[in-house]
Image (cartoon, rainbow, N blue to C red; front, side):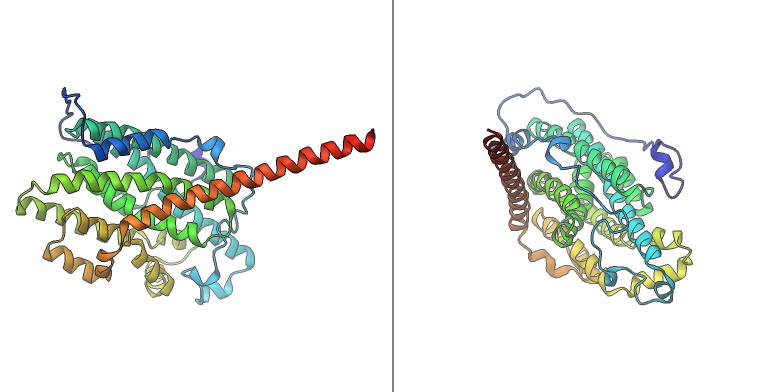
Length: 369
């Protein structure tokens, strides 16, 4: 079956061409680079993994309840439409919401892969080129994983959200070499990381928990890379240049906020667009979800030196200003530890199963003897 057959809406042309500007930069100085970046590059090499082997794809997933989503978190909950739904209808709604959410993860990861490759091309420093090459491979693996999960376990995909596509286009069209860092590493990846973490920490389903934990282990390195590179570079910029980048961040944050409503899902269930928007705006869960989704972006933006008055006012308007004091290093360390803990638990369970199998075989042989 073609992937196109799994889309609930026509995604348009298979190929989306974004005209790109800017220079491809080569660097003939092969001396050692920055110690921190080279250490991150070494870590990026050491931590490569195979999604086919590390993830237990034999785990079953109920496409009608892939994440164990509670009723209260559904934006239609408590409305006249929810009351009229059968259990089958509600299962269909959960399937569509998961398909929509993970489809945006998938499209975002392909965008991250393209942006990482763009950084390899355009960044002037060789140590940054080295690390970006490892990130490009990471993002390819993530796109592979989400594509497989959607096709094999959910059986449904949604096209890329308009706001995500707009931010990707703005990021790739800009000729300045730091913009793929800012648009992808800080905004799109930062938002995705928070969404991944919320699902990872709340789902009781083992396969999505595995997928998200392992992807987040990689993403922790990517955010660290973006912070290092941009923090160093933005110290050199003029106030006017910093304000230009803050304007980009402000616009991107509003686009990301508006991306999160999932109106496409409700409209697919026959809810008029105006009503769908009203229900999502009234959803207490969605308001909390939106706020928490900026928990990775706001402290990162502040850390790299973009914290002008207009940007601060935008974060007050979005209701996320206080997140600027969050401990980003602690969050990233926890992401790494959770993946390692999950690995240890899986390997211990597999070892126990092998030991029990050997013991049973020995016992069976002794009984036969």
